[in-house]
Every structure is written in C-alpha cells, then in structure tokens.
Amino acid sequence: MKKILAIAWKDTILRFTGVTEWLFFLILPVVFTVILGGGTGSSIDNRIRLLVVDQANSPLSAELIATLNLSEAVRPDIWKLNKAETEFSQRRAASYLVIPPDFNLQALEQGVISLELYLQPNNVNATVAQRAIEAVTSRISSAVDIANNCVTSADAIRPFASATERQAYFAASLAAAQAEMSNAPMRVAAIQGSTPNQIEYNPRTNSSAGQLITWVFIPLIGISAMFAYERQKGTLRRLLITPTRKATYLLGTITGQVASALVQMLILIGFGILIMKLNWGNNLVGLGVMLVSSVLAAAALGTTLGTFVKTEAQASGLSIMLGMVMALLGGCWYPIEFFPQFVRTAVKILPTSWAMQGLLDLVLRGRGLVDILPEAGVLLGFAVVFFAVGVWRFKYE
Image (tube, helix red, strand yellow):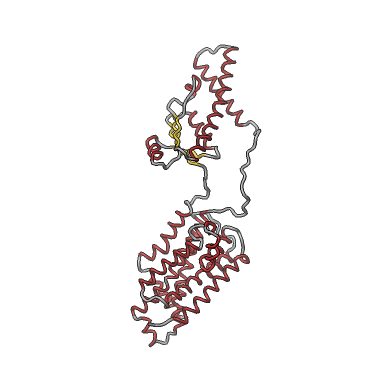
C-alpha cells in the first residue's frame, strides 16, 4: 500500500507542477460551464430585447417603460441614442424605440405625441416588438381618451379657473382611469399552448454536467501520456530491477489520477451548487456511484491508450482529441436530442454518452440510485474491458 500511495503522490506532484495543468483542471471547466450555460443566473428571460431610448425622462415615459416591462413578448432595455443606433445599424438589435423629449402629460393633453420605432426589415422579432408597442400605446390612448372626456364634462359643469387647474384635473383623471383599467376584470383569457413535456430543459444543468465530464475525461485519458513519458525517460525500465510489480505501478498511477479527478468533480459540483444554483444534491449515493464509475471508465481508457502510443506528445494530442470528440458526440456540449436518431444510437458505444445520461437523470430528471444503475453498470463494464486490455498489453519499454 505504501508503494501505491508513493507512486500516486509522485504522479500528482509531477502533474500539477505546470500552469497548463491548472488551466485544464479548473479554469477552462468553469469558463465553458458558464458560457455554454448562458450565465450563472437562476432565471432565464426569453422575451425579445427591445432597445428603448428615453429622451423625456418624464413620469409618462417611465410608465410607458414599466408597462412594456409587463409584456410577455418584449423586454425593454434602456440605451443611449448613439449606442442604440450603432447596435441597430450593425443588426445586433431587431428594433429600438425612441421616446421624444415632449412625451409628458402637458403635451399629451394638448394633442398627439409620436413615438419613433425603428425596425429591421423582414425580421420576425421586430414585428413582435411592433405589435407589443401598439398594444401598450393603445392602452395608454384609451386612458387618455377617458381623461379628456372627464375634463370636457367637468369644464361644461364648472369652467376651470386656469390652465394649471385644468392640467391638474387631467392628470388626476388620467391616473384614475389607468388605475381602473389595471383593476378591471379579465374578459378574455389567452392560454399559450405547448406540447406536454415532463422534463423542463435547463441549459445550465446540461452545461454543468457536460463540462464536468469533458474536463475530467480528458486528463484521465491523458494517463497514456504519463506512461509514454516514463518509457521515454527510462524510469519504467528501472522498475525491472526493483521489487515493484507491474500491478503495483499501474494501481499507484491510476489511483492518483482517479483521486485528482474526483476532487475536480467535487469542485465543479460545488461551483454548480453555489454559483449556478443547481440542485446536485437530490441523491448523494447515486451521484457518488456515477462519479466513481465515470472516472474508472475514463482512467481505464487512458490505460489502454497508453499501451498503443509511442511518445508523450502523441498521447497528449490523442487524449485531447478523443476527449473532445467523445464529449461532443456524447451530449456534453449540446443536448443529445439535437442529433439525428442514428447518431444517438451509434454513440452508445462511448462512455461519455452513458456518463452524461446518468448525471442528467440525477440532476435534471430527479431520478434516484436505482434509475442510474444501468448507466453505472455500463461504465463499469467499459472499465473492466479497458483495464483488462491495458494490463495485458502493458510493457515497460
């Protein structure tokens, strides 16, 4: 046991002596998790972004923006005029709305106020924004008509003493009309139809699980580079004159890398829980089974690959390439449902596919230990086969 621990400790020290290893161990997994997950926030706003330039900064313009914010179609985003024009001209925004400086109660009482809406041609999002703004302005226009009718009726009963009194009465009537319209009972209810889906897809969950698998599999497959390095340096040959058996050396090397991989997984899971607010803790026993079976399958693949490669550079390149391809096809970067059916069937030969399915069953679908046993069993089967081939083909030189 002391020999195994000594080999594991030696390999761990050698692995983390360079800055590059920390890049793959921690920095890149966190960065890609956040990028592919669309941020770390706990809520997703799918409404269409509408750039709003508020040149009035009046209570009426604030109310218009607040009403737009209640829309289920658009999400107002306040911008400066020059920046909104640049964003629109470079086609990074489908539309933008300019609220003129005279958008206030005084101008509204005297006549019609025009809003400036700029739309990209033949753009569906721009059309949706236009319809949403028309709905909001129609609502405001109805309240203004009610307020004007109140002012006219009041003036007929008792003429206003001054324009200031008239404007104050108009403002009060408008506020009362808007309040009544807000409290009015809903006459027509619109229900958004959708196809029933028992699983609510969460891109942050898929990203957290996928990047965990990706960046753990690549270093574990990279065990092959450690074997090639030892051969090139001649240290494996020296083991022939020591009482260290082949099984002891292999077990020590693999143990150290598996332990590092488990620590890396726990760090990434902690990031998902604390920063991305994901629920990784539904079934800790099932999660532990999936993590252990996944790292064993990846370490076994690296052991087998290490018996075929000749140099450390060759092993490093192959481990990165294999890890990336297996992660992509296994659904770690994008949901596996995006691929054609024949691809989804073919990738069952990859351990990343089974690891991803098992983790998503736990963290996304709310399943338990019994449900992920088939995936864990397949991963352990991969581990047995690859370890058997690796041990059988292993040579000191």
